[in-house]
Image (cartoon, rainbow, N blue to C red; front, top):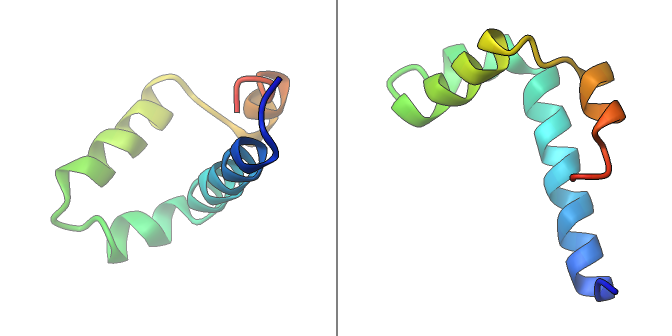
Length: 62
């Protein structure tokens, strides 16, 4: 059983993850312009064609 604190953290991470996915282009241009970390994240998204629909299917992981 997960503790309520862990569940809240997971939900928060999930919200942030969806938000970044939704604002992918803006996030990339503004925040990650010179950030390798950001480019790697969105490179992975593009490489594996990760979409919100796909994430909902594997939403149990998050």
